[in-house]
Structure formats: C-alpha cells, structure tokens
Amino acid sequence: MQLFVPRENEPEEPRVALVPEAVQKLTGLGAEVVVEAGLGGGVSLADDRYAEAGAHVAGARGEALHAADLVLRVRKPPAEEVALLKSGAIHVSLLDPFNELDLVRALAAANVTAIGLEMLPRSTIAQKMDVLSSQASLAGYAAMIVAADNIDRIVPMMMTPAGTLKPLRVFVIGVGVGGLQAIATARRLGARVEAFDTRPAVEEQVQSLGAKFVKVDLGETGQTAQGYARELTPEQLAKQREVMAQHCAQADIVITTAQVFGKKAPLIVTTEMVNQMQPGSVIVDMAVESGGNAEPSQAGEIVEVNGVKVIGLRNLPGRVARHASEMFSNNLTNLLEHFWDKENKSFRLNLEDEILRHSVLTHAGKIVNESIAKLAQT
Ligand code: NAD
Image (cartoon, rainbow, N blue to C red):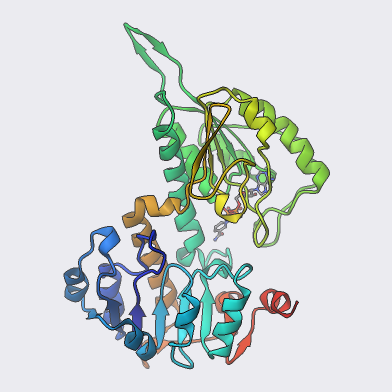
C-alpha cells in the first residue's frame, strides 16, 4: 500500500502530518511511504531525514497524489486536488466538514474514502488517535505564552529589594483540553488562575491544577454523550456574560477557549466587557477560527480596544510546530496501526468499527456520515 504525504497547502502551516520516526514505523509494517520534497521545511526536518527513515522523496506532487492508496495531511485538501486522487483512495486529514460541504461532496463524487479527523469519537480507545486533543493541548500552552509575551508585566510574584511584584491574574473561559493546558501553563509561570466552564464536571480538574473554579448558576447546561458542551440558551448566555464581566475586569490576562462542537463559538466577551477591563490587559481568543468568543477579536490579528490587546492569532499549535507535528504524526500512526492488516500490508477499512463509523465521511461515492449527509442535502 502506497502512502503519500504532500506538503501542506496553507502557506502559514508549518506542521507536517508525518515525522521521520513515523515513516520508519510504517515502513516496518510494510507500507511504502512517499513524501513530497520539502515536506518538513517548516519544522527543520530535511528531506534526507525522511529518506533515511525509509521514505521515497517525490518531486512530482500530482503524480504522487494519483499513485497513492492513502494520503495523509494535517489540513483539508485544496478542491482542485481532489480530482487528482485515485478512485478508491483513502484520504486522512482534518476536513472541517460542517463548513466544507462542497469539498465533502467532491470527495464523495471522486469515490474517495475521506476520514475527517475531527470526527473521531472521544472514546478511550480513540484517545491515542485524537488530533483535536493533541493539538488543543499545545494550543493552550501557546496561548498562555503568547499572552505573557504581549503583556508589559511578568507573570509570577517577585520579591526584590526594589519592591514586590504581584502575580498576574489569569481568567480562563472554557476548560476543555486547551483550557486545561492554558491553566497548567499559567500556574507553572506563577499566575493566580480562575476558570469557568458550563460543564460542572470540570470543577475538580480546575482545582487539581491549583486554580479557582468560578461558579455560575445557569440552570441545566449538561453535555453530550461525546462529552461536548451543549449550546446555551440566549438567557443563559446573558447571565454568563454578567458574571464573566466581573472576572474579566479583575484579570490581567483572559484566555477564551469555549467551543460547541459543530457550531459557531459562543460570543462571551462583548466589547462592552472589554471596555471595563484595565488598559494593558490582554485577551487571547483561542476560538477565533470558529467565530470567536471575544467580540473585537479578528482572525490572524492583534487589535487594541481601550488599551486592551485582543489577540486572535490563528493556528496556535503551529507556533510550536515541531512538537505539534510529532504529536499529530503519533496520532496518525496509531490510527494506521490500529487498522493495519499485517497479512495484506494494507489499511483495513472496517466500516462497522466504531472509530471509522464516526470518522469516515465519504465512501463508495456517497456521504456516509449521517449528520454531514443531512447538512449536505439542505
Ligand atoms: P471543545 O474544544 O469543544 O470546547 C472547549 C470547552 O468550551 C469545553 O470544555 C466546553 O465545555 C466549553 N464551553 C462551551 N460553551 C461554553 C460557554 N458558553 N462558556 C464556557 N465554556 C464553554 O472541547 P474539547 O477540549 O474538545 O473537550 C470536550 C470534552 O471532551 C471534554 O470533556 C474533554 O475532557 C472530553 N474529551 C474526551 C476525550 C476522550 O475520552 N478520548 C478526549 C478529548 C476530550
């Protein structure tokens, strides 16, 4: 079976789907691995490293795409490259399927089996393949580092003959995988941390990291069977904002990570709330790419509102691209190993399996994921 890893199309995407260690593992399983020349340029992994690990380094991307039985990428393929894929090929990447229905339709029409990595179930067995978690974790770390780098103060307490500096106050809104890592990083840097999430189950995790959980009585909030938050009603959201406003006003750094799976991120920090914050404070909006939690945030930019820096930088895991690639690559290798047929040296496409039942979006000319198929019909 021939695996191909093309270079990412987004010019600002330094991450790679496979690192050389993974190539060695996969060739050990009997796969033939081809990587596009220059693949690892953004993470200081030269072609030689891939070649030494057993990969064939290909210059002609179109040909390699057409020859591949399985294509691995970080991000979605560009629309014009779908037609280059071989009929019956498997394509594994993040696909953003709720927002990329045309692309999903094109993959189905090209008879490609597309695995959307964001659709992997959040189950114990799939944890080792879960790119959302591995990348969110690093994004949470990067968010806190970006915040620290953009504030004109140090984070920890410092007692010196020149005076005592108080530790900064960090407020984290949304405590999923990314929020937890933002809290942990803020604590390691010596901040006083508060956090809030609509899922009450998170309280204990927040406390175990040495942070304070902010309680808000929103009535029934709940979570889905997959462990995701449910969308709040407009009344609940208004109540949440009221309490968040007080905590934001006292914070030096606010990190927002709130997301509702498959939906636009909830707007939590309004411009009015930003206006009540201390000039010089910093907000990092980790949800900026799915609509944003902070009203003034702009994807890819740092904007200033009333002296408060609102940071909407994209691709936070890409700021620690080497580690992000290593983790992404481990996730993909675990996925491939899990379904590897040792005898036939190929990926066993068992569509009855719970992991593939969730994540295979197109197969045999059709959109096979129910929720995406429903959306694609409308
Ligand atoms: P996510 O990125 O979808 O959302 C981030 C956080 O935002 C979540 O904690 C969510 O509850 C919160 N949120 C949503 N609306 C909010 C609001 N209005 N105000 C404040 N917070 C709000 O979440 P995620 O990081 O992908 O994790 C979702 C869940 O899945 C978590 O419970 C996590 O522990 C669980 N999980 C399980 C596994 C596994 O078992 N394999 C793997 C990863 C994650």
